[in-house]
Amino acid sequence: MTDTAWTMRSPARPGRRTAPAPEPAAPEPATPEPAGTGPGTPDMAPTSPAARAALHTAAAERLAEHHRYEQAYLHLREAVRLLHGGPGGTGPAVPPPFEDELDRLRREHAEAREQSRRDSLTATYNRRYLDERLADLLAADGQRVCLGLADIDHFKQVNDTHGHPFGDRVLQRMVHELGRALPRGAFCARYGGEEFALVLPGLSPDDGVAACEVVRERVAAHDWSTLHPELRMTISIGIAHTGPAAGAVEALVAESDLLLYTAKQAGRNAVAYRSGEGRVVLAGAAAGRRSIPQPDAAGYRPDTPPPGHTP
Image (cartoon, rainbow, N blue to C red; front, side):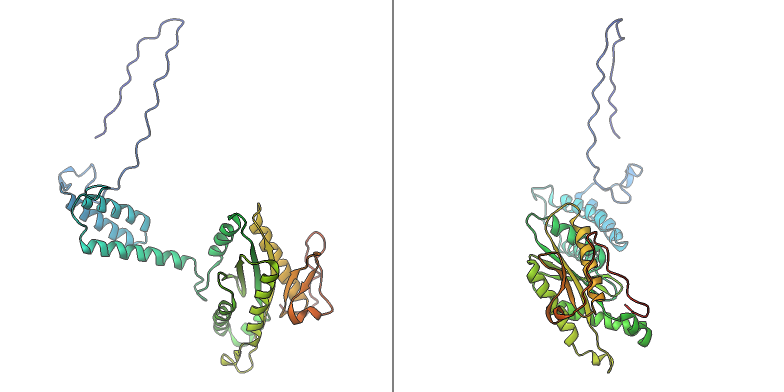
């Protein structure tokens, strides 16, 4: 039962104003009550700390079964407080089974969080993690980030010829090769469909281009015949670089996507980037190609491919 504060006021005199009563302070957040211990069941409420801790533990178990880990933690913290007798830890030691349960719930929470960041097909990071991580990286003071967007060349033909289950196996193998080619500190995320983001923190523009060229070469040199005797796969990459700035994530992704499109238009199996003069050039062996489309000053893509030009 809570006490109610009553404020007594004298009748206001003519010509005088009475000051309003001060607002009561906001109540502290309530400690979660396990089932069977609420105000409506006073006779059932246990009196010993150990009994109340057991009820909190049981409530945490039920919540964890429904993946409600944050609420489960609240109950477990309250159980620990009861068993330890307060923040100072003056009560009896926590029983080993309870410690095991707390560790299990923490592991399940960590596993669930990790699974929410992973692509279900390829097990690489997903778009959700990519967006969160890019925002964190670009918000860091002085952080330099290169972003490469890689697209599998002619992947639609793979699906049309061999079927989608076979295409799924190609995607899984592709992720494996991309990950093995990336430098330390970099990571791969599935951007969507057959597109993958290669995030390269801390690299200069030149080093980022070189890293993406290593990735492209590895994919082109890989022995894909283990999946099918006639299979050969390549990728095209557009790589952009930026530092901390307002709206940097959207600008970085848009520039990488534009350069990826240019690499596809320039013949595929290439890494496209901007030179110091702002022109789009290709890295490595593809640098000698004669026709490299240039986006206009507004950043619009080059002309669309002619009819019959498949992605």
